[in-house]
Image 1 (spheres, rainbow, N blue to C red):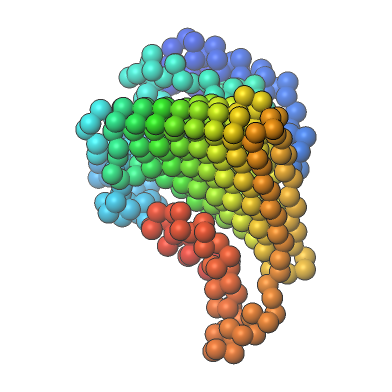
Image 2: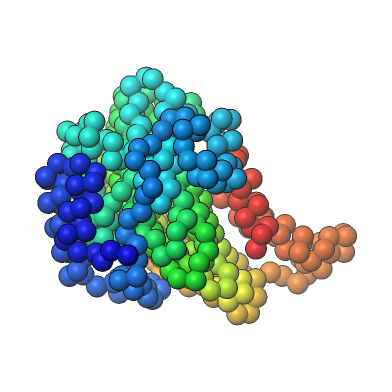
Amino acid sequence: MEKLNEDFIRKLSNKKKEPKWMLDFRLKAYHKFLELDNPSFGPDIDIDFDKIMYYKSDVSESYDDWSKVDKGIEKKFCDLGVIDAEKKYLGGVTNQYESEVVYHKNKFDSGVIFLSTDDALKKYPDLFKKYFNTLVKYDENKFTALNGALWSGGSFIYVPPYTKLDRPLQSYFRIESEALGQFERTIIIVDEHAELDYIEGCTARSYSSNSLHAGVVEIFVLNNARMRYSTIQNWSLDVYNLVTKRAIVYDDAKMEWVDGNIGSKVTMKYPSCILMGNNAVGNSISIAYAKEGQKLDAGAKMIHIGKNTKSNIVSKSIAKDGGIANYRGVSKIEESAINSKAVIKCDTLLLDDTSKSDTYPKNIVKNNTSTLEHEATVSKLKKEELFYLQSKGLSEERAVELLIMGFISDFKKELPMEYAVELNRLLNCR
């Protein structure tokens, strides 16, 4: 296993045939990674960086025909249901295996740019450079710096003005190797009056040693545009999932995060909206389901800057068998954001006496014409409800399942149908 150092980064950049400015950026990010400590909040992060494999790929290029993809890789994506979903309802897909995109297809021919981020750097260098590292800076924390140094794969999407895609685009990320680090970079630009639904899925095999997923997502929602980003991550219980996702939302535009966190050993993820434009809207609805050995620290951030902006955060946390599912979020209404409104609702369901959930909100209002509402509840499964359902002939397991599904019904309604079905399956495997 090669050690992470300047020589490794130079080899990676050379393998990808990148311009000098990208190599310089990677080296700058690497040195910042060495300087920074782990975050001072949230779960403990116990990663031996000398034992991570920072890049792995056995493919030389990606294909738009599954018959050309390695048969073993094709079977894995087939077993995950990804290939079937592409045929039924997706407008395009990017499938990443380990460190590189292995399959990519864009079914739209209306000027929509949808390709791997590596290919975007080569084919649209000016557009790429205009947006890359402008919303999530490499030096924000130790893991944005690590992503900056090592990023590989991910999706680059540009939707032209007045283009409304009638089918979602999807990316699926798979970690197959032990102790692998995956560092995809996703950049999405939804131009004026355009609309896009994007779906993300994530899985990994289980091993005894830890893997690391440290992705970065930058989204630009221009005037009067609409964007929805839906995620169901079901990483194995040896994965550290440390992701930075952020959108900037301009005049009369709307950004929606639909975020499901089922797997991983540790998750730290707070999808964010910067409501820059007047009348901009940001919504986030999420669930975190923590079981034994899991610490899920998730939530959302909404920063109001434009006038008459609105944000809504709905967080559902479930904990079982000693799992920890926390909400951590920020809602900040700046002085300039007059007549704005922020609403936060955090609900927690504890399935036993050994599990835990805490709420860590930071709510700030800097003008007297705006409002902020925050509601939080913590509850346990009620014995009376279980008894009632069991009296109707249901097993205890089935009764608990129905109560959980009712608890997360708001979240399920926001998911694409196929992902709602997948969520049911994952929760039923608890």
